Image (cartoon, rainbow, N blue to C red):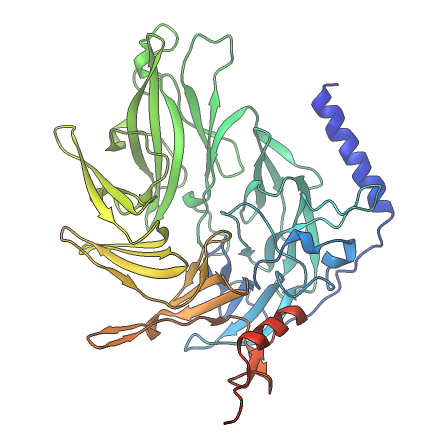
Length: 497
């Protein structure tokens, strides 16, 4: 047994022993309203997910440091901050009949994470309540769960060490990546597989993606995960192999023969090493960005950054459909439509890269008022509309062939360090930077006219109740007592003159 396996076994035993000293938690809850498991799902894998006329969302960002004993995250006893809420969506987009549907902290350090809805189940991640033999809660271990959309049944899927583990839920499996291994835990509408199975080992790079819209029973090419593997150390081949999987049998996309070589005896300059960069969904498929390099006479040479669009039932690599987007090896890109080039918005001075027909590169400068965090890019024939956050403020800019201006849209304080702000229809949901709860703004409230500018002001998504202790006579309903005191202090009743 290797040293690593011994350590893992010891940790597992310690957790089991510690769990023996912890009381059992009850998962009895609900029913919370009615449900519509057959309705389409919008915005899966994010902070706020819509299914039919219901919205499910995380009620803010709580810290695992607040879990000092198992009961602090027991189902039904956890803080309302970080629990998952359920609201009805009216025709005008307002939320009502709000209640806690998963009374347990949602948490992941993976910024690409979020909650998912498939059929009658909500899928989420939460810190474990298990302890070591000293009674210390092992919050660095995360448990993956599903709960019925009315809260009445809960099942654990698995437990994994590491708060930043990358993962994705599909309608029939959890896929996650840790220790250079890609795993799968399958499930049906009724039961969950007992153990995780290995999809691929010795993985060197992984790129998770998922469909944001789900129609019950319909698979999507957007749900494929992409990963790379190196050749064995005794192989004469250079470069690596690229695969895709949706939890089923991996699909080989590219290897040493993809560009016309025939293995170890071929020219090494066509045996590429791929580095996965970004996946972006379009209405008819998914665009995958990657850089390539090759080793020639012992020196690594960059071939540039490329993109390829996959459509149909599963990905299939066709070199004739490969599009070069830059002569440089880009590490972060924003998809703005391949005909528009590719945006690299990582600093106040950012760039749009475009390739010319003669193989040269055009690098157009975009100057922002700070470092932008892109929330959304709407690609239209007239140009690309960017929504992004700078210094906690929501901004808007239209990228065309002409010089465009940056527009400040909000007075809201938007946090971008955790789950990304996300649009559900005309409403933007985000973690507020002041209270760390989920807020929302109605984009149609923004006015930008000569001598008339109305900025967006965020409100607690989970709603308010009456209070005689605040300036406007209301107070957020689903917040902790400590946060209520802070809110009252920040919004005091005005003294009578």
